Image (tube, rainbow, N blue to C red; front, side, top):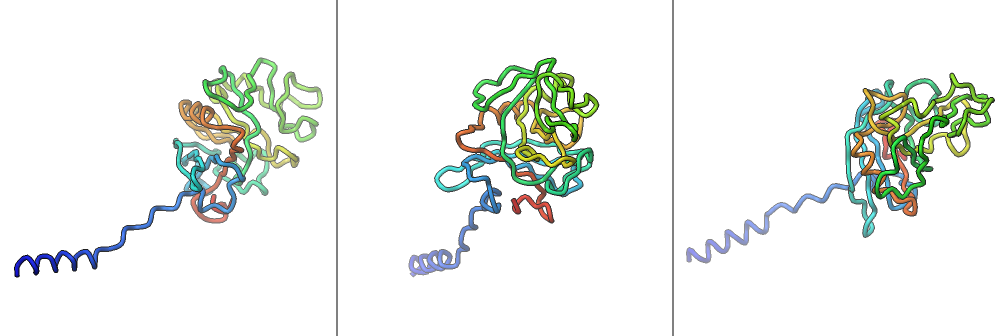
Length: 232
């Protein structure tokens, strides 16, 4: 009798056992768009005024997104701003979904890097002059139509530009005054002028992971609100 009672209690406990919690849905799976490729970088801040957050890189495998790596990140000194409304010189990081045209750096190409990699020289500049034909472009030698006061002399930036990826914000069809020279690069002393920065080892890991044949994009946004990353 005791055996039957024990068996009945065991069966009853199985019958009322709670169902296992569903697996959490990954961030890319909750996004409106991931760029159509099978690799994605997400850069997420707590809110539009935040200057820190997290960068995570993802692979799409077997129909789902799998985290490949993650690192702390820094954003613009004045937080984040909607990419379509951002203004140049505001020290804000533009939110949105962007392609990654190419990599560059003052240091040699890291092992495993598959992206096209431009090596910085003493003649390397990034033009941010709104009146220039080279607006939001790398130039070797400063063209006469791009004022030095409105350009970044890339070799002068040292550690932050040891390795970097160009973020395609305002790149394909530049809108004057919206902003230029937005990169994913190595950490400097603090918040950025609008770029996203990560520790040096994380930057090298991203370059070794990223495969242009898999069409990686970067999505930049906040956890919620009008600039929520899930909108992109």
